[in-house]
Amino acid sequence: MSSPLVISNLRKTFGGLVATNDVSFSVAQGESLALIGPNGAGKTTIFSQIMGELRQTAGTITLFGNEISKLSTPARIREGVSRTYQVPRPFGEMTVAENIRVGLMPDNIWHMITRSGNADRELELALSVGFSEDDLKRTPSELSMGDLRKLEMARTMATGPRVMLLDEVFAGLTVGEIAQIAALIQQMRKDGMTFLIVSHDLKALEPLVDRAIAIEQGTHIAEGPFAQVMADDAVRASYLGAA
Amino acid sequence: MNIRWYHFALWAAFMAVMFALPEFVSRGTLRTVIFANFLAIFAISWDVLSGRTGYISFGHPFLIGIGAYTTAILTKRFDVAIEASIPIAVIVTMIAGFIVFLPALRIKGSYFALVTLAFMELMYQLVQVIRPDLTGGTRGISGIQGITRGAVNGYYLSLTLLLVVAVTVWLVMRTRVGTALSAIGMNEESVRGSGLDTTKLKLFAFLFSALIAGLGGAFYAHYVGAIAPRALFDINFLFTIIVAALIGGAATTAGPIIGAFFLTFLLEYLRPYLPGAERYFIYGGVALLLYMYQPKGIIALLETMKDRIIRRSST
Image (cartoon, rainbow over all chains, first blue to last red; front, side, top):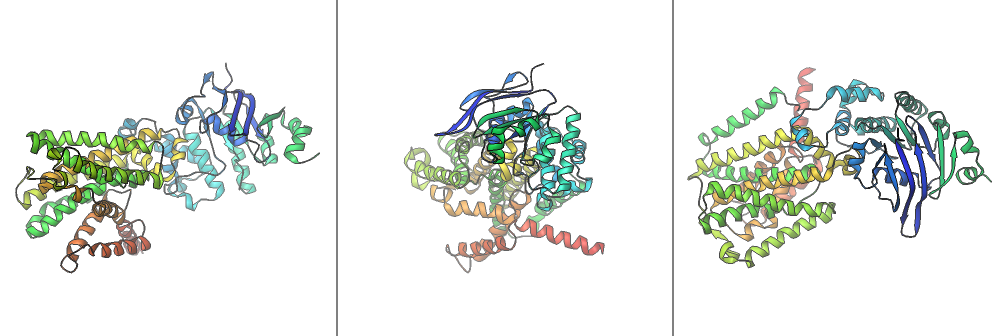
C-alpha cells in the first residue's frame, strides 16, 4: 500500500525568497509526524502547498498514490486530506452545529438542496471533540480559544479526512485544553488517522508523534525519532537558539 | 431543512392579509403597494447574491434593466407574445448574471462593487447609443403591452410574483445551500477549506439572483408600460434596493420584504412635504439611525421584541 502522503522535492519561491527549498518526506499509514522549526521556517507554507492554497514552484505532492499537485483545495479535501489553521476560522454568525454542518456538506448543489443534513453526525462530531449537546446552539463569539480549536477540529473531521494537518494546534490553549486536544489526537491515532502536526509546544507534541522533521528557512535539516531530532546540533542551533 | 409548522402559519397569515388588502385600502394605496411588491422582489434578488455571499453588487439595476429591456423590445419591436418574451428575458438576464459573475472569480470587496457599478453605467450608456431604434435611446420605450388592467389586477399579479419568489427563495435558503452561501459571506477561505467549491456556489447565487432580477424586471416593465435608461440605471434606484434589503435585514427572506414596504411607504408619505429628491435625505437619515441602533435591520428588532414577550410571559 502506498504512503498516504509523499512530498517530493517541494520548492516554493516568492520572488527572490525561497520559502520551501527542495523538501521531501513521506508519512506512513497511521503515522503521526511532527513538522518543527523556528518561526518563519516555512512549516505553514508547506501545509498551504499540500492543501493547494499555495501552488508550489516545483515538486510533487502525492496522496494515497495519486498526484494531487494540480488539484484545487476542495478536490484535495475530497481525496482525503484536510487541515486546521493557526488562527481558527469559524463562521462567526453560525452556531457550532452549523459550523460543523458546512464541513459535512456534499460538494454538489443539487444534493445540498434536495437531501437533508445529518444532524446525528453533527452531534457525534461535536461530542467527539468534547462539546456537549447544549454547545451546539452556541456561536463562536461565546467560545473560548480552546473551544474554537475544538470546533475547527470537528469541522475538519467532518470533511472525512484520512490525513489531517494540524497547524499550531495548541496555541493559546490552557493546560486543561491542551490535555483535551491531545487526548482527542491520541484517540484518532488509535482509530488509524494519519497526522502531520506543527506545534511550538514541544512538550505537548512529543507524546503525540512517531517521528519529527525539522526545517529551517524552508530547508529540511533533520529527520528521525522526536528526541533524536531535538538533540540534533543543527536543530538546536536553529530552532532552540543553542550553539 | 429545518421547517416548523409556525413558519407555514406565518406565510399563510401574510398571504391572507395581502390577498384581502384590496378590500380595505384605496386604489392609490394599492398602487403604492404594487411598487413595494416589485421593490421587495428586487431587494430579495440583491440579497440572494450580496446579503448572503457578501459580494456587494452595485450593479443590480443592470440585471433588472436587461430583463425589462429584453421583454419590452421583444414585445414592442418584434411582436413576440408576453408568454415567450418574459422567459426569454429571464434567460438573457441569467446570461448577464454570468457575465457579472466573471469578475467575482478574481476580485472581491469594494473592487467587485465598483466593477458592478461600472456594468450599470455601461448599460446606461449602451442603451442610449447602440440601436436606439430598438431601445428608444434616451427616451426609452413606452406603450409596452400590459399583462393586466387596473390597480387590483396589477396588485394581485405583483403579489403572486412576490410570493412565488419569496417562498422559493425561503425554501432554497432553508436548505444547506443557504447555509453554504451565508458561510461564504462570513469566511470564503474556510468554505473552501471545508471541501466546498466556492466558485460553483457563487455561480449558483449569481444565476439565482439574476433569474429573480430578470423576472422582476420583465414584469415591472409590463406593469409600468414605459421604461427609460435614466429611471432604470439610476443610482437612487440602486440604493433604494440595497437600503431596502439592509434596513429590513440582510441574509433573510422576510427582511427585504419588510424593508421594501417600509421604504416605499416612508418615501410615499414624505412626498406631500418633500416632493423633490430631499426625501432621500430623510430616508438616508432613518436608515443611518437604524443601522446605528440595530445593524441587522428591522427583522432583528422584531425578533428581539418577540424574545422579550416570550420571556415576560414565561416569568
